[in-house]
Length: 292
Image 1 (spheres, one colour):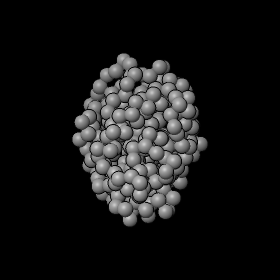
Image 2 (image 1 turned 90 degrees about the horizontal axis):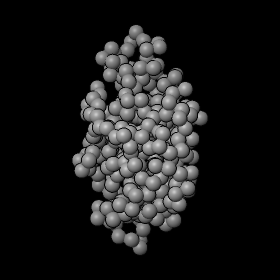
Image 3 (image 1 turned 180 degrees about the vertical axis):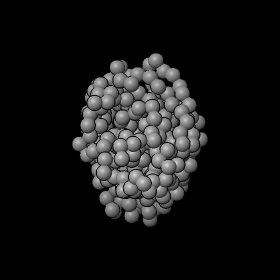
Image 4 (image 1 turned 90 degrees about the vertical axis):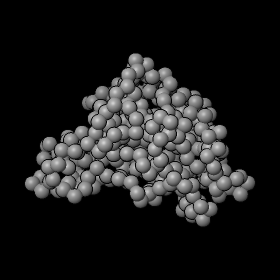
C-alpha cells in the first residue's frame, strides 16, 4: 500500500494552511502549464500534507481561468493520494445557513469553458463519475467536523456553474427545484480531473450565503461573502488539522475505486495512442499506460 500524502486545496478565503510544520515551498512544473501557486509541503502531526491555493495567493485566478489540469497534475506528481478541497458555496436551503459546512457526495456540472479532462484525441479514456466523492475521505472529514463542533450536513449535491457571475434568480430557483443543495464554481472540474488522476477527492462546501433565491436576504455580493469567509477559514483550518492528525499512515483503498479509476478506462489501443499526449499523461496515467 502507498503511504498517504494529503493534498489540501484552499478555495476563496483559504490561502494558507495554519499548523503546517517543517514547511517548504516548491514551484512544480507540469506539461499542462503552471499550477495556481507554488506547492507548500509540510506535516500536520505525523501526516504529510501539501497545500495549494486554488486561486493563487491574492486571489489572482477566476474560476474559469484556473489551470485545473496543472493543479491536479502537480499534486499527483508529488505523490498526493488524497485531496481535501475547501470551497466557498451558496446554499439553497434555509437550514444550510452561512457558516454551515456540507460534506457533499454529488455534483451537477454546468460549466462549459474549462478543460475538464487530461485525455483527448490520441488517447481516449472514460472514467466513472457515478460517485465522485471518495466515501472514506468524506466520512473522515465529517467526523473531524463533529469533533470540532462545526455545524455540518452529511451529504448533498453541489451544482457547479461557470461563473464568474453569480446566478440569476431564475437560475437559482431552477437549481433549487432540481434538488441541488449548494452552488459553487470549481468543485466538479477538480473532481473529474482528480478521478482521472486516481486521487481520492472530497469537497468541504463552506456555506457563505443563500445565493439569490431567499426572499428575506439580499442578493449575494462579494462584500457579504467576505464577511463570512473569515470565520469559515478558521473553522476549515481546525477541521483539516483534526482530520490530518488522525489520518492513517497508509492510503486506504477507496470503496468506489477512485484510486483505481483508470484500470479499465483507456479505450485507445496502444498502437493508436499519440506519443506526445501519452508523454504528457505520464504523472497522471503512467501506471496504466506503461502497463499496456
